[in-house]
Image (cartoon, rainbow, N blue to C red; front, top):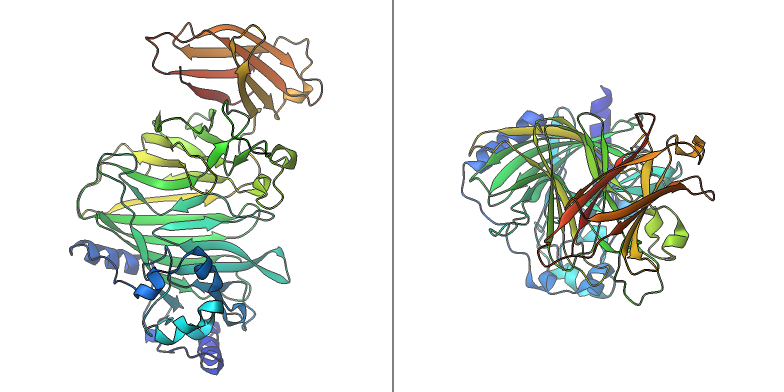
Length: 504
């Protein structure tokens, strides 16, 4: 008997012997990326059909009731087989009303994992379980792996709601989200949220250190086949490839999209009456151009909806980062914002020329995401034609820039009343350069007369370098502008480029 047959037989025996009822209907079928591509292609040839409506009693439960429904971890998929990964399932209800089908696969077989109320503890909602249909399905999956301790299975990735998913690296807690695809974000057409309708999870071998699985995307505008290779670690990385089929062409598509939250930080002029110095999941949009230049744009909580486009002929990487890792800058013991993951995309195929798009929305509390970032390709997809791309997605704690990087951006007023912007660069070779050396600021501004004065000095307390800009007062003719700066020494670029959106 081959190893794969042993693994498959072990699954069937464990499911049949469990204290809950699984249907063990294995089908001889090879599920791979071409298989899911064909499923997506066939689906795109049909009119979009929304998911079936789930029972009203699940739709009507509130947040607290939903939290009462907990998956029983001892009933996780592969929990009793000494495999490196385990799978738990999310129950439908509250905001999660789109049923998801989950399958387990080997190289030669597939079996559907049916819904069972016996997998869950319903808490005070115990009356719910008896009335739910047997074909209910799930709201998503939670992937576990011994990420921080070899004896403990930790959450490493979650797929729940539309095409949203999140990942964790060692020592992190949940923060920003990723999505499979963004459609019409920030347009008058209104954003559309396709969903991952079905998953196929490849059963791992005992020594595997990555998990392979596939997903079928479906929505009003497009379908898609996705392959995911999850590699837990520091950082955790997901290798992603996808083929999309468009039923119709949307106004805007966003590849490798992120959703995050920025309420306020050191850059904020107007702060709420909150004891915490900063509250955000991410604080900078960082990009690496095809030439190797790094750009850093501090996030803001704007007074009005703000869009920014950063055009590139090609890009080596980009993402939303949480660069401030000092607890004292947040002072939040429970939320632990200093441990939130960054998100970093490294394009592989199918990206080409395009723009990193940043959408910032005004928000008055920390419970809602107000930051979206994604890649908008210059190439327009064609209806019913395959649109293929691939990228690596990681959730780093550290910064990707090898040079000096922007540690903080602050704003305020000087003693003479002028508006100030203070930027600190650290890291790279900056600490080893003496204060007396001729380090210079390379600055550009729009409008050109925006900056009245600038200074640069080394900070003796942490070996960073501080640039201070003094800005003129806005005029009635001003709309908005942009500032860009980096540090140079003897024709050597020392830092990434800081860029900032100026509003009158």
